[in-house]
Amino acid sequence: MSQSVPVTLSETSLAGLFFIQRYRFLTTPQYARATGLHYSTAAAQLRQFARVGILGFFGNTRLAGNGKTPKAYSLTRRGCGRGNLDTIPVAGRAHLPAFWHTPGQGEPHDD
Image 1 (cartoon, one colour):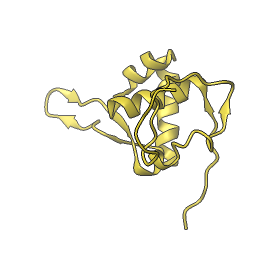
Image 2 (cartoon, rainbow, N blue to C red; image 1 turned 90 degrees about the vertical axis):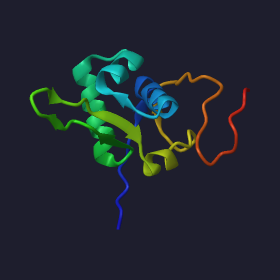
Image 3 (cartoon, rainbow, N blue to C red; image 1 turned 90 degrees about the horizontal axis):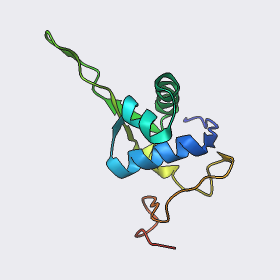
């Protein structure tokens, strides 16, 4: 039985999820730049979103003699299903471009 986990999104984290949806996946430094957050804060947010199932990730594997590949985060099907902006509690007022599109809601349109 799946458990519901309450997640409140700030304006910056909602903008970050928008960019993950738009570009399919982002690394932690890219997410930090897109949201204007410090690297450690962005990394903590991404880990929290991955822990509750909104985001999935790949990478972070060892390469012989070269270190690790960067960890990249992407929206999961479960995370996309939660993408209905009417059901996500947002702390403050979020400003998103008019072309925000949530899967399953038809084609994107300009308002």
